[in-house]
Image 1 (cartoon, rainbow, N blue to C red):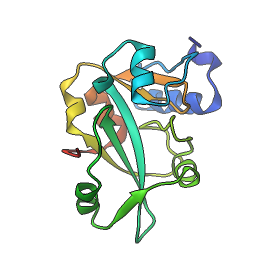
Image 2: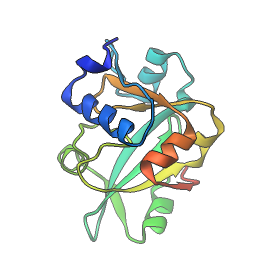
Image 3: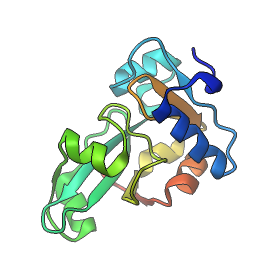
Image 4: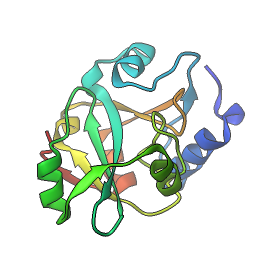
Length: 161
């Protein structure tokens, strides 16, 4: 594992953002990829349900970025999300994700974006004492609480699956 003073630029940006919220969460970079929820759970030694997967959508009419942070195994109900957003949505492509978040797919963090995003939090994440989220690269993660997640995202807690 890499210590925070040796983090890549994207992971360092997440670490700085966490500290700006007053959180002591520590970003770690893993030797193995944590691109999928299953890979991340294996790497940090937790259940896949404790992994915060970040999925970016694009609104079809206004082109806004919408971030859903969901429990690892949960599939996002796109019809429900469209209703919550108030317009049709589509999965965002890699270029859109990088432009709106500053991160590559597989490393999108719930914090540290280059633009403000509309954020929705899967209510299933609230049942765990600790959860793990991507930290800017497919190899970087950090541990936090569901309360911390709500603080750093100002996201709306919803039933999304």
